[in-house]
Amino acid sequence: MKLLLADGQPLFRDALANYIAHAEASSVIEHAGTGDALFKALAKNPAFDLLLVDVGLDGFSPERDISSLKRDYPDIRMALLAGEERLPQARTMNGKKNTVSVLPKTLSGKAFMKEIRHMLASRPKPGAYAENALPVLQKEQPAVEQRSPTSLTRREKDVVPYLVEGASNKEIARALDLQVVTVKIHVRSICNKLAAKNRTQAALALQKMRIEGRAL
Image: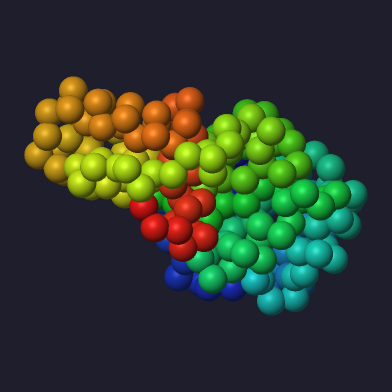
């Protein structure tokens, strides 16, 4: 894959590029540290598969520039990168005419790569939003707000951080010194209490609650 990564923090940009290159040996990654550098890179060579842009990139306005980018480069998949402090701003793009996917910088490396592969495998529809899980369209989400997770047991609450990070049952079992079958039971119970169809939807709902400051 050929990717253009636009972020104003060189350390983060280099670390993310190195991780992607390690996970996908055939990837070609170009960097941009400002909005001006981003547009120059696209003008010079528009044949990118994926464009990742920090929502707070200097010289880049999501409200103004996403529309023109999607018009001028309709074949490039796009996503906004956002730290916790910028997530509210990035989320306002959802539901707008020219919205793009959002990738929180709080994602684990494994989850981030799943997001990228998903985006390259199928063009996401407007409103797709990723939060420590594969992007799931809003219309496919259960109404998790209708059920409160305050009845989670102490052990289930111990499992939650690992579930949100996308850890496997085996990884959770190892971290908490539990049997894998016990972890499966806890995960199934958490899903039931959240009215989530699977662990991906449960992780998405839990991450949303954390961002909104809602207690478990």
